[in-house]
Image 1 (cartoon, one colour):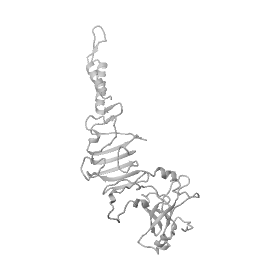
Image 2 (spheres, one colour; image 1 turned 60 degrees about the vertical axis):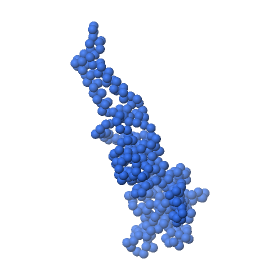
Image 3 (tube, helix red, strand yellow; image 1 turned 30 degrees about the horizontal axis):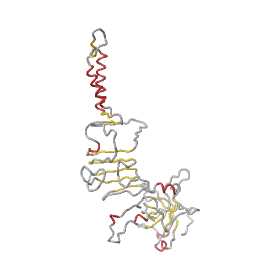
Length: 345
């Protein structure tokens, strides 16, 4: 391995042979991620070890270069020792994405026709960092270095995160820590929380935080499911109460809907209103009360009307000797109280 004395943020392009409309691709191994000392933020610049030729790779001979994200608006900041794709342009080096770790491919033996790849246990298909046999960065104690903030302890803490499961045609964006956005669809042949009812081919977007490979409202730490013509299986989630609506239950509704879930939801308006508008029912359910807003407001209005009648004298209290008798609207008031009590659980 040979280190170059790099003093400029731009990379040398001497080997490119002048300007060209083509881009050269290389395999690169991240040696350093440049962070701001005060905040640990980065603008995306990395130091990368590049083997320019096959002979260099065989000799374990690398050049040290700086590189910037190919797409500055959309990129993953790699970690030390991670492999990336390097492009050499007229103005320097650029990196794109991250090459899957070596053991990502260890599960596949596609050269052997007798092996059934579909039955392989892919226990080691993880999205976290893995070392590389030809190049590693170590500290003075020969401990492998992962980065300034991605310490050995941090990597071990997130090592259980596996690559998300996908189906044919899916597009996924996932991080190394158990967060993802999946663009998928409803397909009755694929087992998903939204595959029970609805039309095949209708789009679904699943945004989730959680370490499980497949979507599951029960195990996802937090999630947003955007459905277009599906129902959602809520799994083992126990609602207490399930719904304030005496009609259709949540898991039986089929149609365009958004399901948001977590242990706690907070809606904060910093400068203006929070408004909830529904063409049909608005229901609020807690462990004690199940309230249909329409019913509640109807009863509040009726109670206020009866009280107004008493105060205005249009409803009277019948007494034999004084003003302590039973009111003529007692039955109505009792019915209102009974219906309000019926909301209590």
